[in-house]
Amino acid sequence: MALAKYVKEMRKQHELTQVDLSEKSGVGLRFIRELEQGKQTLRLDKVNQVLNLFGMEVGAVPMPKNAEL
Image (cartoon, rainbow, N blue to C red):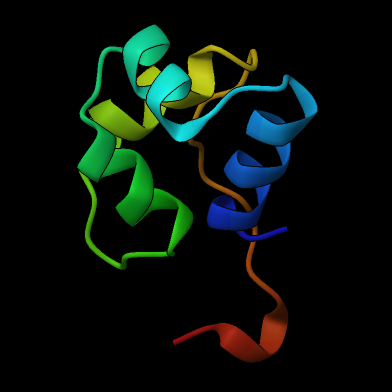
């Protein structure tokens, strides 16, 4: 599942607005909006601040074979 979709679904599941999520995670509202819109360049430390509320963090995952260099 894409990160943006995951964050948005978890936020809604926990009945949080974007404002609530930004306040609880300690990041700005603009960052939450950009995260949920799938912005390609985001600071990982801030992404982890948000994900920590849901007991998750960013990590390395294996890529499909056809995606290798």
